[in-house]
Amino acid sequence: MIGVLGGTFDPIHFGHLRPALEVHECLGLRELRFIPSHVPPHRGAPVAAAGHRLAMVERAIAGVPGFTVDSRELDRPGPSYTVDTLRSLRNEIGSDGPLLLIMGLDAFASLDTWHRWREIPELAHIVVARRPGSSIPEHAAYLELAAVAESRSALEDRASGLVFFQSVTQLDISATGIREYLQAGRSPRFLLPDSVRRYINEHDLYQPDTEDPQ
Ligand code: ATP
Image (cartoon, rainbow, N blue to C red):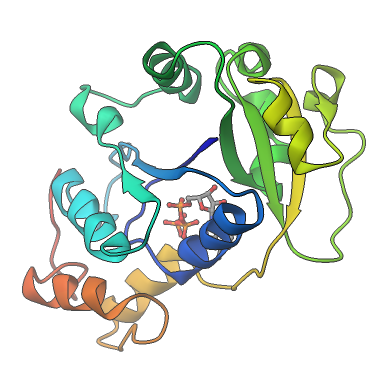
């Protein structure tokens, strides 16, 4: 089974990496692909260029068995829709293998606002990484289209169309918070891998009063 985790990764941090590792382990994934997305430019936001965000993911996952990075969304001009990315992955891996789209509970709850979200069940399963003890949103619109899988093996038996709730350790870390620390001249140490912190320092990313245009 292949899992994919999309995000801006601006920068990638332990709040992404630890839940990803737990999903990878608990579901016995063959591969977990991080897919950095385009960031819509908004004024005043210090956002690292796509090449830097990709390089930081590469640094973060270096040496982690089964973790890979996929630059297809950055290789296409403009923002990509998840449904198009899933279709392009599906074309590559064929129609039989399970493909898992990993997301947090918040994203899952608002999935019905995504572009062509009704097509997702024919393309992938969804794995919702949730904090242990958090309640499952039984009335989420997506659950009208997709059944809840009770076990990992149910995901293996079909290529797409199920939802699985996976408890993971959640760390209250955000990329926004990390950028704010850096902007204030504070250290982001212990919130992200040292390799990523070094990359940020080497390339002067997110520094006070600097902008890194896309
Ligand atoms: P920003 O603060 O810039 O909005 P972010 O830290 O939320 O960024 P994204 O790259 O937007 O990171 O997130 C990618 C994916 O990872 C999303 O599905 C998001 O819900 C999830 N995610 C981000 N931070 C955490 C966290 N601390 N714990 C669990 N999931 C997270």
